Image 1 (cartoon, one colour):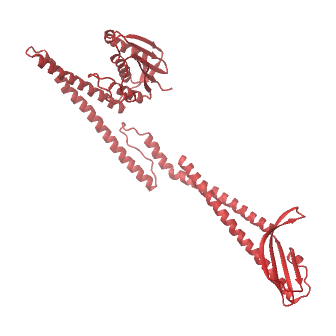
Image 2 (tube, helix red, strand yellow; image 1 turned 45 degrees about the horizontal axis):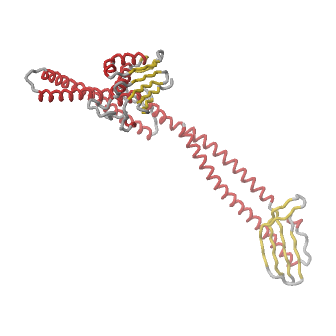
Image 3 (cartoon, helix red, strand yellow; image 1 turned 180 degrees about the horizontal axis):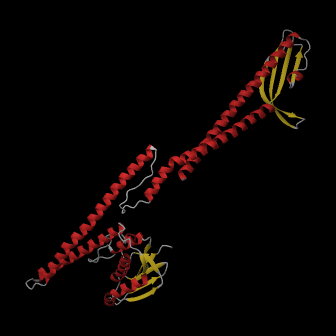
Length: 422
């Protein structure tokens, strides 16, 4: 439900930004409205006082009448007219603090005399009222926002349930199984269209997969048969007594090419089968026994090159793999260490529960070692090398999540297989 959480956070963040901007605008508008009301009251008081100045000689104390401080001063002369209205801070001896006031000062003249009017209207009550309104609005907004987020999450959760159901079906889909995808029913048109497209796409992928698999198997089988026939006919020709040396060399070259083509076909077919997960039978395989059998089968090659073999094998360690792929993996690695070794060299094999290490002597490779596990990348210039051995090893390791690495140091080639942690 990460999408729902991210959506809720997005809505909440957007609402906070909108609220902050709207809150500032609302506060300023509220301030203008209240200040306008205060100013209108001050103007009203000013008009009342000016009317009384026109008709009365003595001016009463207006503080008791209007509830705030008003000072009226009369002059026996005319004054220069002036008017000001502003906020000001005045120290309040009772509160022992500065208070904010709205201050109006008027200088004007009646028919017989001049006068000044000074009115101080405290703004503390206005500010308290404004703060109370803002707090109430703040609480109401966040309460409403919280309710909207909860409602949105619940509705979104119900709306997105078919989507997560579709994801679950896709994660459990295996193209090798002859089973159609069964998507959950939904009333959402968009999800229904998505399921329809995914179903059509999976059907096409499954159809193409089985067609390709069938083609690969048939092509491999059909190619192997004529290759075997050609090879047998060539062997009969070689045994013929009527052939000259030139013809024999030509037939021998053809025979070698046929043998190479047969091996190439078998190697590519094996890689395809591994990629298509056609080796599903798993069992406990003791690698030490596989290594010992493989070394025994290569005894003649080892003696021919006068190689020194040292082993340190963990006997109790077993790995869960397909037995055939295990044999191919070990055979390719050991064959590679023998084939690319030097005469009188060594091979050191170490097996533990964590790793398998095969180290052999050999000349420096001019090739880019990062490409050694690629198809048709030869580690030597030998004509009989197909460049598929290490590619097959890499495919098997990837299939079983085994980490494989190669290193060369001081004329020693080392291939290390790190087994996955159980």
